[in-house]
Each structure stands twice: as C-alpha cells, then as structure tokens.
Image 1 (tube, rainbow over the protein chains, first blue to last red):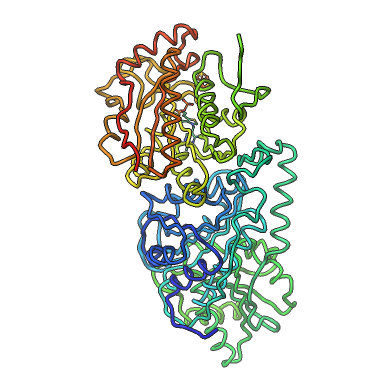
Image 2 (image 1 turned 180 degrees about the vertical axis):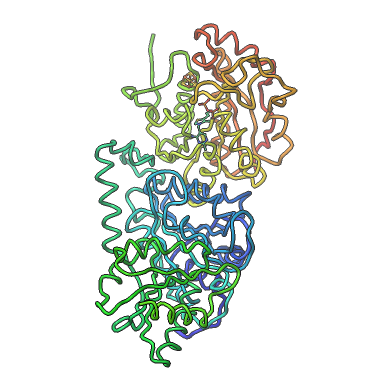
Amino acid sequence: MAKVLMKGNEAFAEACIRAGCRFFSGYPITPQTEILEYMSWRMEEVGGQFVQTESEVAGINMLFGAACCGARALTTSAGPGFSLKQEGISYLCGNDIPAVIADVMRIGSGLGDIFQGQGDYWQLTRGGGHGDYRTIVLAPASVQENADLAYLSFDLAEKYRHPVLVGSDAAIGQMVEPVELPEMREYDMNSHDWAIAPRKQGEEQKVIWNTYYTIGADTYMDYLKDKYRTIEENEQRWESVQTEDAEIVLVAYGISSRVSKAAVKQARAKGIKLGLIRPITLWPFPKKAFEQLGSQVKGFLCVEMSILGQMCDDVILATGNKHPVESYGEFANVPSEEVILEKVQQMLKQD
Amino acid sequence: MKCSVPNGVNTSAHIGWCPGCGHGIIARLVAEAAQALGIEDRIIMVEDVACGEFAQNVLQFNSIGAAHGRPIITAAGAKRVRPDAIVIAHPGDGSAYSIGMESTIHCALRNENILALVVNNSVFGMTGGQMSPTSLPNMKTTSSPHGRDVTKNGNIFDAMKVLSQLDIAYLARGSVESPAQVIKTGKMIQKALEKQMNNEGFCLVEVLSPCPTNWNLTPQEALEFMKEQEKYFQLGEFVDKGGK
Ligand SMILES: Cc1ncc(C[n+]2csc(CCOP(=O)(O)OP(=O)(O)O)c2C)c(N)n1
Ligand code: SF4
C-alpha cells in the first residue's frame, strides 16, 4: 500500500477503524481532539457509533457497555481527562473486558499545559485507578508506529481480555509524517463467547461481572498472577539501537526516543560508544532488552519528559541496580541532543 | 390458589434482598413484561453495584454489572452496538440522580433507545441508608440524623419535573405500595419496553420502593411510610409520545 502524509492522531484513528473498531465515545481535550474529530465523520462512513459524551467518565463507562457486548471500542483523552477515565479502566480490568484507551500525553499536573509531555508514565504503567491491576501500555514514537500499534492494540486486548493503553504525546499526535496504513479488516463482534448479546435459543444466561465474584477469591489470586505473568513473558516489545558494544545506554520512549536516536548517531560520529533501548511496551517493561546487554555497559541514562524521571524506577528494576542509572528529565521542552551528549560524556568521565 | 412464575425468574436463586424490600417485586414485573412481549432472550440488564444488583441472581437475563452511577450510560453503550437487544438500565435513586445525574440527563437529551428503570427508595440502600437526593424533607437517615434539612442539603429531586421538559419517548412513575399500584407499574414497564422495540427512544420509569431496613421500619410500617413518599413524588405518566 502506498504511503500517505498524515497527522499522528489521524493515522491512529484511521488504523483503529481499519482494525475493526466500530465504537468511539469521548470528550474533547487537547492534544487528543483530532482523534475525536476524525472519528465523528469516519465512524459514520463505516457504519460505526460515535458519541461525544458529556464527560470522560461517561465516555469510558459507555465504552464499557459496548466492549462488554464484544465491540471493538475506543476512547481517547489526555491529562485531566485521562485521570477521569481511571474508574472505567479499573472496571475493565476487574471484569476482564478488552478495550483500547489512548492517552495523548500533555505536560504537568492539574491543568498543566497542552504541550507534549511524558508525565503520565506512572499513571499508565502502575494502574492509574483503584485495585490490583496493570494494563498493557504501548508507546508509539512515530506516525507509522501510531498506526501500527493502534492496529495491534485491539488484538492484544482481546487475546488477554484486558484493556490496552496507548501512551503517545502531543508531538507524536500532532506531527505529520508519511505512513503506510494497515489493511481494512473485518471484525466479527460475535467471535467471543463471553460477549453479551441477545441470546440464541437454548443459550444459558451470560453475566459480565467482577471476575473475582465469578471464580471466588482463592482461584482469583492464581488466575490474576498467571494472567499478568503470561503477559509479561509474551508481550515485551522494544527496539535496541547499537547496544552491542555500547558503554552507555540511553533509555527513552515516544518523542524522547527520537532525540535519543539522533544523539546516538552524533555520539558514534565522535567515537563515543552510545546505544539506546526504546521501550515500545511500557508495561510489560522490556526487561529482556536489558538481559541481552554485554558486560561492557557502564551505565544508563533515562531520557524523558518528566522532571522526576518516572521511568528510572523500571530501569533500576530491570538492571538489578548493577550500574548507575541517571536521569535526564525535561518539562516543557523536548530533550536536547546536546544535553544528552554532555551527560553521557560526564558519565564516562566519572567511571 | 394458583401461583405462576414468569419465565426468566430463577426460583432457586440466592436472593439477597431484605424482607419487605421492593426490589423483588420490581424484578418480577420486569420478568412479566418480558414474557408478555416474548423478549426474554433479547434482554440485557445493566445493573448498578447497589441493591438492584441482586436482580441478576433472580432474573435469568443476560446482564452487565456496571459501576455505581453508570448503568444508564453503560446501557446506552451496549444498545448502540447491540440494537437488536432490549436494554434495561437498573439503577437506584442515588445512582441515577446523584453520582450518575449527568448521564441521566444527557442520555435523555440524546434520546438513547433504552429503558432506565430507576428504583427510588429515598435512601442509599446498599451503603446503609444515607441521605439521597430523593430523601424526604426532615427524613432521618444515617447521614442526616436530625432529619433532612432542605436549607442545608437542598430540595429533593423530582425527575418527572425535570425530564418531562425533554424530548424523550416515555416518562412515568409507579410504586409498589399496593397491589393496584404494582399492576399499574407493571404496565408502565411493559409500555416502555414496547417503545424500545419500536425504536422510540429514551424511556425512564421510576418506581417508588420500600427499604424497611434503612428506614428503620417493619415491612408493614414501610408500606405506610410510602404514602408519605407519594406526597412528594406524584405517580403517573408524564411523557408518552405515543409512537413514532
Ligand atoms: C464511585 C462509587 N462511589 C460510592 C460507592 C458506594 N456505593 C455503593 S451503592 C451506593 C448507593 C446506593 O444507593 P442507590 O443508588 O440509591 O441504590 P439502592 O442501594 O438504594 O438500591 C454507594 C454510595 C461506589 N460503589 N462507587
Ligand atoms: S437495604 Fe433496603 S433496598 Fe437494599 S435490599 Fe435491604 S430493603 Fe432492599
């Protein structure tokens, strides 16, 4: 298929449609709004349902109803609106219901601001709502990947009967790049035996309810541990860039990974052995990428748009704290290649 | 005396409701209406986490357990993707008129083709009888121990006054206070379901229901208290668009 020029958010929306998504409910908020606007006309074209709901709480709970009925359902938001989605995400997890939720990240707490940010890492990866859960989190770093991961997200959600979050950001959502869109796929809402629908003759009653009520507390403990273990084992995704001989390894996702990649190139031109691990799944965190590193590694530098360096914890966990893990966090500005290189050179000097 | 049970009622279920609770009668009315219309297999009940939830043990319809306050919006989502289903949201008054109010109004504004069957017992039953937007003036509850003071807590919410202004398919209030009212309420539920079958749009049927446990009354006294409830909440049909 030929490449077309598209905005990240629109490529994401179109790829969801092509994955068979036929239900969208959401509320406007920058920098996510293009997804909602795109869906407002595109859903109609493909005979799907688009609802601009009264709030994000309504959006996620309406999605819950559609998803319980087996529809491929999507809601998207950012910042304050993503916080309001947490109730429903917890219910999706509690009831084992697949759905896709995108958080096009902006900066700051409270209202913050509409620029690109990566401050929702903890909220995305730790389970932003109540209870004992996590969700699969995909982090696209280009318009192409926004489309590819949108397509993948519905499959993953159904494979595990679990919500999948896509954590992009204002830059990835707003930038225009060439993209090869995936094929239009047919999706059959009746392909899951758990989905609620009018009953066929002689069919038993189906109830979607908290899984723990259905299977009992003791069974639930093993069930849940098993479910998360399986996802962790199967679904780690990442890209490694020149890590084979790297002495310092950058760790960065989304918009920060693009700058980090450029920094690796610059460093290599100067003879500095720099590499990059780019997590594509933020959860499960790609621990396997770190296991593959050689003994020449001297340290890690996390590059992210978070003042507190939210991802560092995961890198420390993945590396067993064997090497220094430094943080380069930005707030309103995208990290700079120059600062990355300075920090890397400092780290090498300290060694 | 011949006793018959409508299809769809599981007579051996663990019920869960307190003695004298009105929820069970309302569940039975849903089953009777479904049987009369022959739609038992098409029904999707969307329950709140509150006392209404036990309906899913008793009624053998497909059902979805929604979050507290969200049955109406969740039901609207289900109906949008399963237009052949007959979808019934089953919240309490706290659910529909307090935490879930925004979606009650907006689902009505969008004329979502569902039935919101709201059980109004004038308290938060499940959590132990706190004041709800429909608690009567001066009514003692666990969170208004001196009686509901409307100057502090606001006036009671009458859904019929508000929703009758909107362009919806059907709006009615029934009661389970007496056999005559139970029969009338059953007809309201059936009418609303027929309207959904005809794609007429949003229907809300509120049913006044006793909660002896949290009213601190015997079942018999609770029925007496319902006469008080009916002074504030007028019974009858408020919107009936009468077909498309
Ligand atoms: C978000 C949230 N807030 C509060 C609760 C606790 N809670 C459960 S049921 C309920 C009130 C129930 O009252 P009502 O909706 O009137 O139904 P009833 O039990 O009286 O039938 C509350 C406050 C909850 N489950 N979720
Ligand atoms: S607490 Fe009240 S509403 Fe709940 S089951 Fe008991 S009587 Fe019924």
